[in-house]
Amino acid sequence: MTRLNEITSPAKKVSPANTAEAQRQRYLEKRCAEVMATLELKRGQPTKYKPEYVEMVKFLSPRGLTDWEFAELFGVSTKTLNTWCARYPEFNAAFEFRAEA
Image (tube, rainbow, N blue to C red; front, top):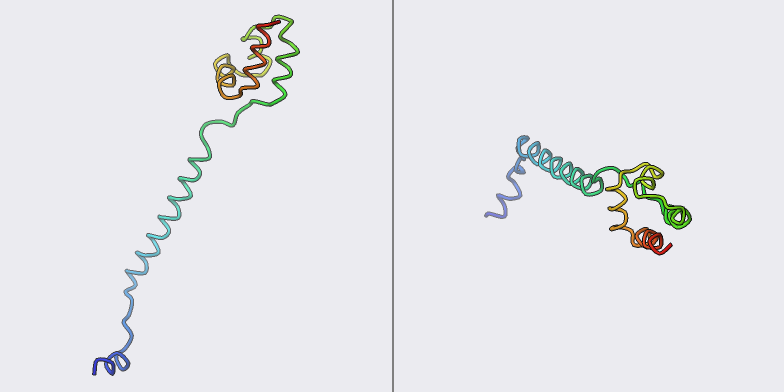
């Protein structure tokens, strides 16, 4: 008899509040995921570092330029130069070349 009741009884209606709440929840989850992805991709300004700076440092090093002068040339601070030396081994090697010249 339960089978007969299942067939003959009207389908259970989904409460509009439940669907609205479910839609809201899905929207919030999607939006939070988008925001988190954006935060992971964007941390500060994009770097001004360019690989051709390595050759410039090697070429100009024998002329005795200081860190401050290199920073002015590249449009950054001396702190940024130090950061580039830590982050880019080839850039750091170019400055070590300067010490040998």
